[in-house]
Image (cartoon, rainbow, N blue to C red; front, top):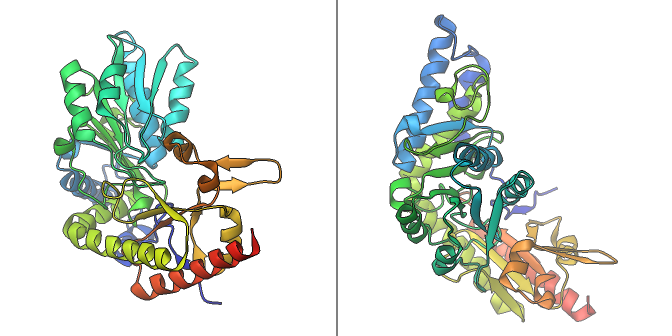
Length: 382
């Protein structure tokens, strides 16, 4: 059976063959612990150092400001909990947005059970945070602002640089979850003005189970794992050399081909959007039409149900739903709710996300399959 066309790159990416090749020696030969002082630890230790340099070059920071983690979720946990613990005597107020990933929202919820307060900023119809709302939310006891760089569902890119200006003015630490943006758009930490930035390897063609957290040297943060002194003493535990090597190579590739990849993903995304607009009536784009990731297309099909569309296309197209319809209720994405998308549109929402490996032939097939399925359901009244 032919594999379905993969249009879910925001969920995870395939491993780049070049990255697999770089990782192979650490599967087969260089098994040593990088903390070992003998011969077997030398090459793994150098590999970790090299990867740290590669990540730092992509983000335009110092290598010692990069801490390797198990992924984006851990990086977000590390950043928010670490700052909260380090600055709890200064204040216990955190600002975030209503459309953050659960790896941010859940952490804030946990901290609220331990005496912290969180302000959840609203967004407009495009999923954008208003910088004036950030300013109004700032209090004397605000210690942290955490706003994602780009949204994983609709792709909207937030005005992080403007938020950073506010954070600096008021002396507040700024964290951004950049799991979806790094490798897709420029995300250099000094241009963004952030103090902490989270990366997930499996969003950029590296293995699952590896990530990184950028920590500005001046940022106050408590260590995340206690034990030995790995990762500058901030995250104890034997390093995941395989994953680290893969992430480093992913960052090298991203840095060298960012412009080309941006153009390709946008071309594929726009081909899909135009093709569906020409073949299906009553579809709506969610997210900002311009300030959006080049690969992300979030569409609502009016009057249809997302799970019914996926049932029709599932053997040929891989995509993600923005809503799940059950016999007794409809679960709408918290992002669509925050954007105020009407139920009649929201329940029929799908997210399509293109990648470096997406081809024009795949997009042609996707347009045909999705449009045929949508028109069939419209005609049948489902």
